[in-house]
Image 1 (cartoon, one colour):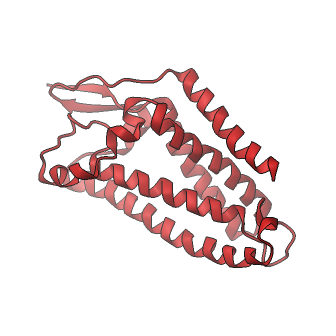
Image 2 (spheres, helix red, strand yellow; image 1 turned 90 degrees about the horizontal axis):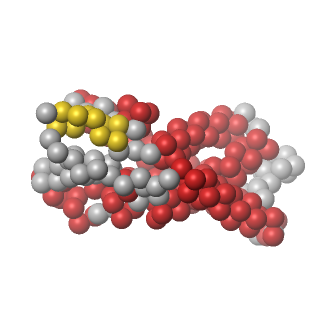
Image 3 (cartoon, helix red, strand yellow; image 1 turned 120 degrees about the vertical axis):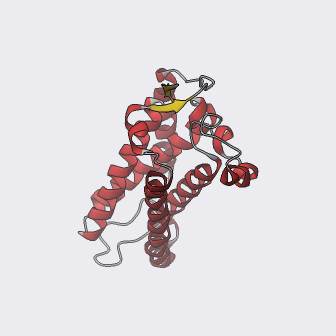
Length: 215
């Protein structure tokens, strides 16, 4: 018997779609030379990513790293020994992708903070002044690393398509509604209260904005 199961909380879903919008916005602003907008979006995205990292430790069960970062279970999952009922959130393989994407984003955003405007020298990253002439080198790394990040995003999209084609599982609707339709019994997940997400987001903003203000 199939039934709907709540899998994703609102903070996790909002993070996913706001991050996507910011990613597109940052790419477009960089392509159009709108570096001031690009940098402001970068700082906002850093707050968002720091929030997700913190939420991965104190948030809802399906959002916690402990729930899905299980490298030792990847082989078992590929063999079919780990079912969606046992792991209704991110599966062990998807968990590695989440960690890879968050890590790549943190590297890219970190490099952006130290990057320089090599064309007009009118608007550098917030921390570029700390490394002086090395900022141009960091800018090159920032541009190169974007290709790595883009590659990971491509793999992520291909995985979504593969699940739809090979397993007849659409991963997109649950990230919109928060619910999955599953067969059989599923142990209810534990969800953190909404107020905690607000506190964690505020803490992320203080860490990022406060840290930049001290420089």
